[in-house]
Image 1 (cartoon, one colour):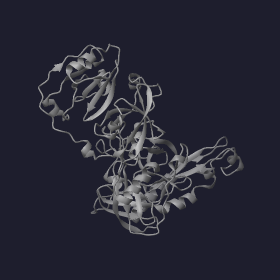
Image 2: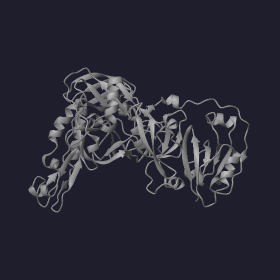
Image 3: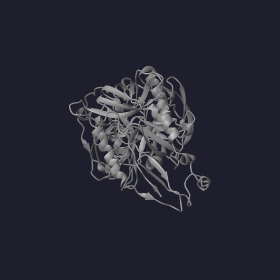
Image 4: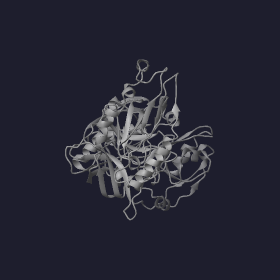
Length: 540
């Protein structure tokens, strides 16, 4: 008979009364512990950061029978040695002012923020709408009369006091206090932050500190055992167990640059910035976020992988900023309808280039709108997030070999990667010149009949903040429940192509639209707030 028992460690600085309350709650839960039995198969009980294995064919995990059945060795000997190695390098971070998990509740941010909706288009992000991460409950509240406080975790990467954490933990902080595993406290200063990956580096004035080394990302595999270490709810040195449940998670809507490790190790508020380690005690990633209906852990957690964090942290530590590579293209995922329109293979590998910056390196190299990027520097491209990260990590000034599919034929184009301009510069728009008032156009009887369009004029360009020199026709209305709405078209979208025919005027639009039969789909090139994307409109 094996029973499940849960223990907690109170956070440093909590009052005795708080500590008793926490222990009392968990003692109550202990009384409800269940007994698990099995004589037929191996069952693993995971809870409260404790993993227990039931009997295997009448024997315990450590028996020869269990070993012969392929039970991972870690289960036979426990994880104490790994924990002893890792926990001294994981710290508690208390923040006064902004930042922290109580200061920035996940899911309560506006779209485009680290824990709001996905980024809104732009250069080399692409994406598509995904569910917004749910709100997370705050960490332990501050005492009466004290400034607002919040808490997170961090990992020591350098014996001289350099610590990596999440940007959202320390963003806007007026004071950062780091508590080590031996309960020593230090005031930290921010070395550098990178909101686009949600990473930050802080430093404390200390020497000869325990630290962790980065794991080799290429050796990670789905199913590998992992430990998450941090300070959930302010409870320092908390360890939970899980596996890697997925790799390369992008378009989650947490940061601009995403390639997350997904894990079912329990991650809760306060775990942000903590360590995700392998069975060698090496740092695989920085725990960042969860998806949850309740705000608590439900087995879907995300960590920033070492493949991204290594370069970012090194740059922040040395220069306090991050320099990223830039191709000067807008990219998007390939849907079945777009694949059909562009006559692509059924497997739909690669990502679609929806726009090319006329002043960027891709335009100079000969990359065209409609090209499909299938490989970058010899690595096969599977998703928008992957290509975006590959480009960002490429050294500025280096020639990248970009393999594209154009008109059904493969070709390799050499693109000299440039430094990514600032968001402000990329979003810069010229004032629109005056244009004559246009009239609403009656559309042909086909899949585009659900759209109201008109020629661009000065009034509507000013109203919708449409950049100057923009050509095409503007969508002024979308019929509710129609094919246009189903495709995601919006008022203010500028239609610049219809089934790959260029549209500059209303006459251009009508000529192209009249060629579409009632039962045929239409592929539109749309300019939305300065960003180009292809939209497939399917007939009902």
